[in-house]
Amino acid sequence: MGPVEKLILNKLVAEFDPGTLEVTNESFMHSVPEGSESHFKIVVVCHKFEGKRLVQRHQMIYALLREELAGPVHALAMHTYTSEEWQTKERSAPESPKCHGG
Image 1 (cartoon, rainbow, N blue to C red):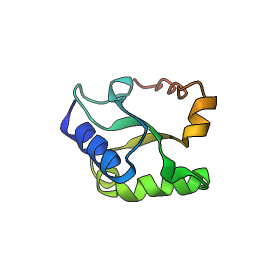
Image 2 (cartoon, rainbow, N blue to C red):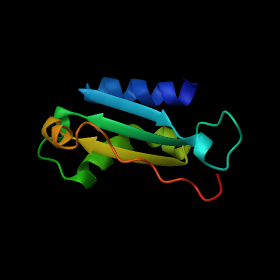
Image 3 (spheres, rainbow, N blue to C red):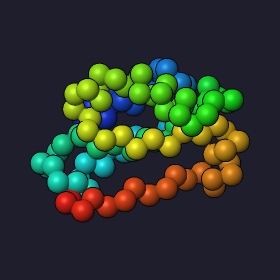
């Protein structure tokens, strides 16, 4: 786990205390140098998302990770669920598409 991935993970844990959290560095799927930390996928299952629309959930994460998104992180795929929604998803998020250049 690289430093950017670890920072994202720690911030999400501290802010959301998620029931489920996955942070995946998907940079290898893109046309970036080996070892890059520029493309991430996150799955967050959290009680704080109860009653929030998808856009509101994403805004919460954008606000939390604004420094990373202004710096090293180029792309962030977000999958945000309440516990009830996660149960109906069979505890998995969609796969990310392959990059045409990667």
